[in-house]
Length: 156
Image (cartoon, rainbow, N blue to C red; front, side):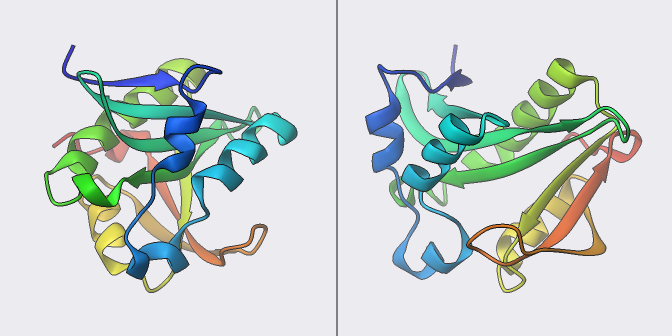
């Protein structure tokens, strides 16, 4: 299986924690070590490694499902700096969206991103996400909130 996601376990957590974005992107996302700790201790998010065959190329965390709004959060999504520029983000995002919706049956997916991270915003917009005017100040990285209404999901 070429591109796939695999839950983070005792076997792969160290490799996932070692992934990082470029130095210029550090301000835009929490470290994977922080995110892994958050998913372990807060018990709301599930962490996944993003693999191309058996090569770990990225990390994602999602969860925070709400029954009342039938929504979930894609809380982290990153491609390691060594693999950026190869189209992985565009190829993994639909897999993650499909995985989240099949797990929760949600009608909306939310995410937040640093307001200066225009490349990420453009990526998300190309799949149907849009800014909803909300601010996410709940974590160490301040962000603007984007949402995807599943009836507008644009599978590229």
